[in-house]
Image 1: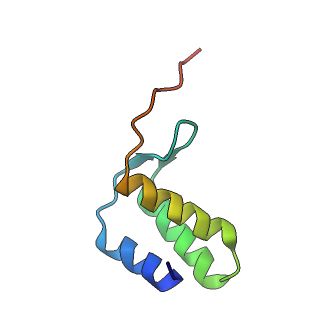
Image 2: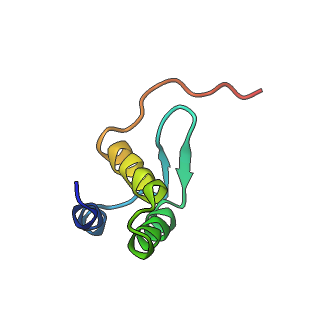
Length: 73
């Protein structure tokens, strides 16, 4: 997936406020995180972290995490 395709995906999708990416990661303020990562990716196309996080968010939207909760201590 190209950077442009990734950006186009986020322009069309409805973003939740909070998104469980996996057992250990919950992304709060999803829209702000997406906007920030798109901006970082545009400013530095070699920024692999921003692209990786956007892909994680996209995959979590497409396939919501359904595993067990982490027990609270």
